Image (cartoon, rainbow, N blue to C red):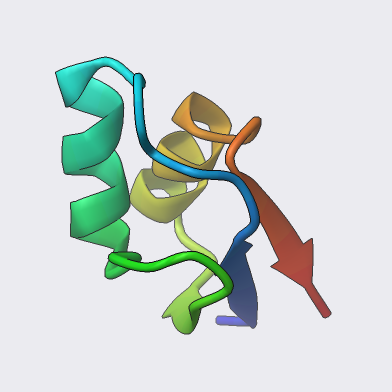
Length: 58
């Protein structure tokens, strides 16, 4: 499978709790932090849920 890099670009302050949990599940805890994940269905669903807070770095 292909890997994708995800970077948190916006703050999690004033986001709903379920979006904060999704960011934690992705491994993003700070602004401008980057993580790398396999591009599977579960990860893509999490990305879709918080797409307004992150960017995909290729």
